[in-house]
Amino acid sequence: MRQALFLLLLLVSTSSAMAQERAEVLLETTEGNIRIALFNETPLHRDNFLKLVKMHVYDSLLFHRVIKDFMIQGGDLNSKHAQPGQLLGSGDLDYTVESEFRLPQLIHRRGVIAAAREPDEVNPEMRSSACQFYIVWGKQLNDMEISRVQQRLDMHTKGRVQLTPEMIEVYKTQGGTPHLDGQYTVFGEVVQGLDIVDKIQQVATDKNNRPLTDIRILRATVTVDPFAPKEEPKKPKSTTPKRRRRL
Image 1: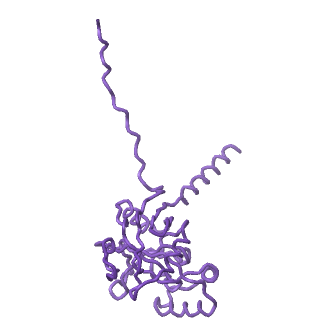
Image 2: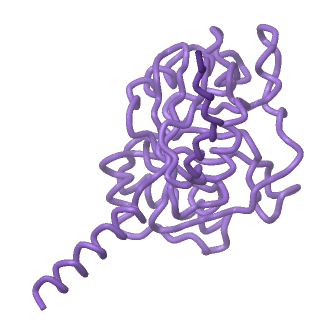
Image 3: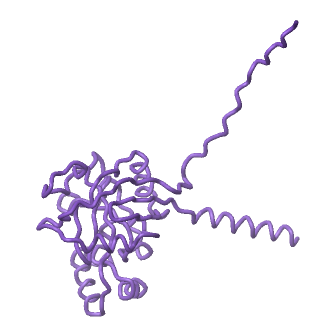
């Protein structure tokens, strides 16, 4: 009986660990490395991001939009060969991704990665850009600022998004951009290299928020992918035994 119970607990523990395993992507940038873990709660965005990384879509693209105390944005396909001062932000693929809002679990706290998108006027379903993303920096908010954010959310979401006490505590202690909650899909988080994000979000920019000195994603690679199909071991090739030479 005890042995059966132990085996059951082991099976449950193993299944739980497997369910929590997350895919990871490494962004090697001109400012340093940023390692990102992708949330399993947003499988459409997770799988799309992994696909694009494996296709090397992000290699050599710029962080083309940087706003201090807010976020850093990349993924514009037109940025790979952009001239100095060129206006960026419209480069994208020919599809969008269905929104995956997961409140109150996945919120715009500092260090998360979220999908950019076109504005509500032309995108009422709030579908995400296929390839453009941003990493949140934001700032720590006080009670008065939280109250103003909630008023803004009430206006833009018609009361659909309500900041819970747990969410408020995160924004007061960790910081972030709560006015974006429930409107842009959060699909991952920085697990290493938040200091690099901080460094990037402080750089000098032009009037269009493009860094004066290009900040480039040199290479993006999938470092962990528990969802990749397992390759079956290749069977060894059979060879015809050579005949012995006879004298």
